[in-house]
Length: 142
Image: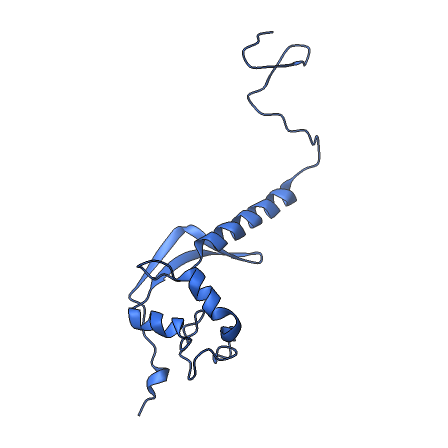
């Protein structure tokens, strides 16, 4: 006889998000949203299912996920992470705001690596100069 707590509920739908990415350290992967049935969302909310690997748990909010590969710190983080990732009527896993910030940080690191030292003065492209190199304000002709 199977133990009820070990039963895994499959997602209702997995939606590929090709315009979104997940950034973890220097690794970038494509994003997706997973739509879960209400029963699975309730089990995650009350700590009976791991938010990260979806492994069912025997007791609510164990110190860490029982999956030896995952080991997500459920007691310390799951309630707060659940509040961030599950919002509104539709329940999706993923934090687009965190992913956006991570992507911006990755882009900034890439830009810094690609930067070649030179002049540190930035001049807007719409600034006009006279033949002698004098910067002219808008509306003034040389």
